[in-house]
Image (cartoon, rainbow, N blue to C red; front, side):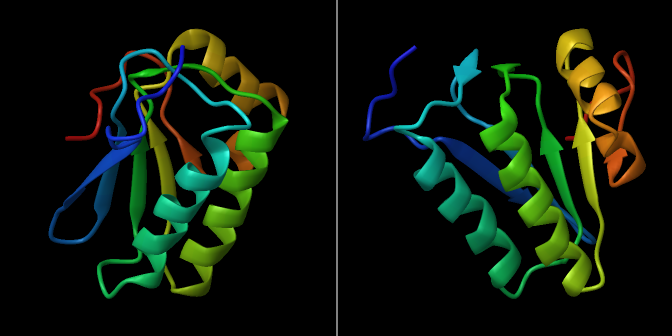
Length: 119
């Protein structure tokens, strides 16, 4: 799936104690073309003055690769440095399995499929 440069790749919602990130495009596929923009947007959320807790709502994500996992791990380190936590919510079973197999469920919070997604 290609991405229209005028459309945001993600949206965020500030709650009292966390920032919830939604990947904006239905059935988003991370590509080498959009990874730098996604990384920049995610890291920008952590560098701001908002809460250090970040939840990634993965309901629109259908595919991840090692590059995306590396971005999430770097994001986790930035969030943790601010005293916060990173949570992954609403991942489909295949995405959840990837987090499980790579051991990332031991690094940050990954909700099991079927759990109520983050707002």
